Length: 298
Image (cartoon, rainbow, N blue to C red; front, side, top):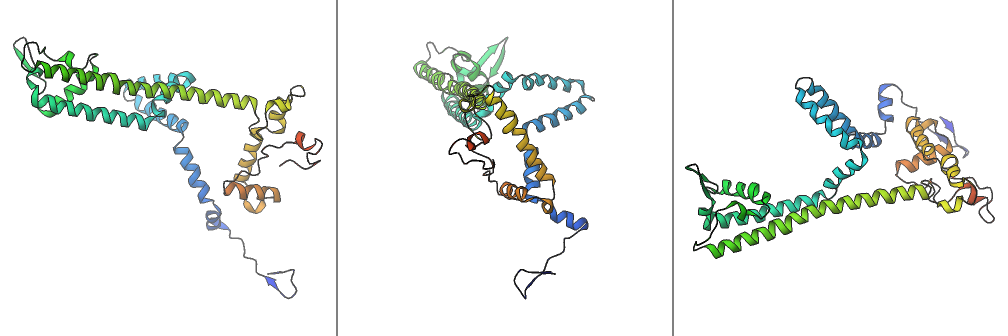
């Protein structure tokens, strides 16, 4: 029990819990959940984890080691960007593929009901029926119709002289137009556009990091009034690694041992506020006329 500043009043101080239960209660569960969530959703960790798993399985089946050849796509930055372009617009890509499957199914229904006889081929006295049921017909349209450069018409018997010749022409041309020309082109366009967007983002980030301080956001032109000004500022005054090490220090230091400044930063970090970063401010600007004199840098 400690005496309060107010005369006649006392403040009860709760004892600090020790032992295993005390250590458990002192753990920041919110941070631990966030930390493990970051670990198990990190692409680098997942890559190394599965790389290790395939390495172990490869000792029982040597063919599994062939998967490790994909390491070249991860090691070379240009190739990794190409892989990311496939998943960058993943939702739009998946929806477009689903739409294409629906359209192909509609053509399958039409073919199964009206043009089934054109899907029968005879080779070496063996009859091959590619549309004997809906599943076989749909599979044939997906596998052969999409792969064919001219659409499903390239895989069917010619309709010359048949009473359904005109309808077959419309069927083949519309399949080619909607599936090959439009939908496949949209899928290719999504991948190409995603690759261009990723390349622009990488170039933009690289340009920003090379021309602005990551900590305060002040541009290179302001510091380069003196020789090596920007380089000195980003390596000595506002070194990103120093801020990272300081946060790591707070994460591993007990709350009860924090200093006043450390408690201030720690409370902001727990609420995910970054006001302690000196945005738009630095020592050099503070010591300029009208810049706040010798005010300490945040």
